[in-house]
Length: 504
Image 1 (tube, rainbow, N blue to C red):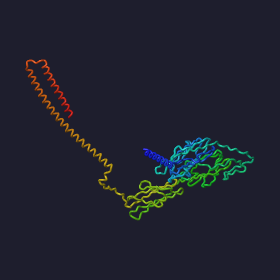
Image 2: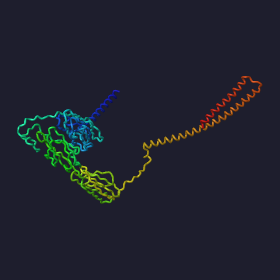
Image 3: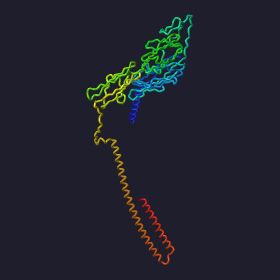
Image 4: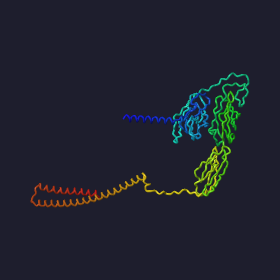
């Protein structure tokens, strides 16, 4: 008994250790970096959402994040530098609801700490703000989509009151008006304190990712103004090093760009802030626009040399702005077939089509989602026929499967029950007939017996009644005998009739 107990204890310890090892091998965290910090009201700062697989291999993360919108506001959520290339839920935010949502994945699993998205916050007022994951999941690259999330780390940011710079005594020298040049150094007549503004952080609900092509030329761009900004310079340019000179005073917090401002191609929204120190760093935010469909193209049909050869289709579309992303080909109204530009350049060989004329439709998509459709008839003379469906000859033993045997036994059991039911019915009929016959014979015998008994009684009564006188007891005996005879005959007759009714 002690040996069995020791074996059981060892078994449970081994199972516990294996379970613990499995849990530790499949664990991942999602977190903000930095997860803590102290900032002043009006200041903007960034926090990177990261996934730490802890040695596991994951390829997808989804999360819904909440923050105190009274203390913090989101300026933008950027996918730049993200490990994800596929997005099931585009990064979005709502300052009114105080939420951030995203969901993405990567075709290549990763096992080291990686960046998912970058959030730019603006400190609104003093206080302590928590940024926490309401829901989150980290899916392992195990083919099953196992959620291996172990913890979602809450970030805490402390916001202090805005600091008001203390100006130094002014000199009587007149301060000349400063122009928005690239020189951030104050002039000799400028009274400077603090530091020049940092580069702005711009957000747009239309142009979310600066490295993605969009098929629209109208968008609203917005940014948060620090408390000490006096002027804003904003311009559209084609250079990533452009310095804007168009000044908005008082400073604006957003700008609406239309088709008059944005044309197809790569442009930059250049913006910088100015405070009492001077002009700050310039942000050139890339904007990629393509509103035109790919150029018209033809589908070339190249027939094969052999009679049984299928034709080869070649096609190539051009897009002068964003370039061709992929093609979708539909043959005779069937399901779309995805064709890459590389595959289209090599040619697409048709196959498994019966002789006849088919319409082939090819749609070219550029990287902004614009499309152009081309179609052509294709004659097939390869003589291909679909394989005929022939019934395979099956032996008797092939039917002896467990399921067929079970069904056969059920049918056999029902047949036996039916045969037994008929047999029992016939046997009961024979017994009833025999019993009915016996009843009739009993009835006949009883009638004969009672008739003979009645005659004998009457004869005896006649002998007795021939005497001149009967005593009182003799008369009572004669009357009682007659009454008993009548009652017995009546009762026996009733029982015989009941038996006859049952047998009918």
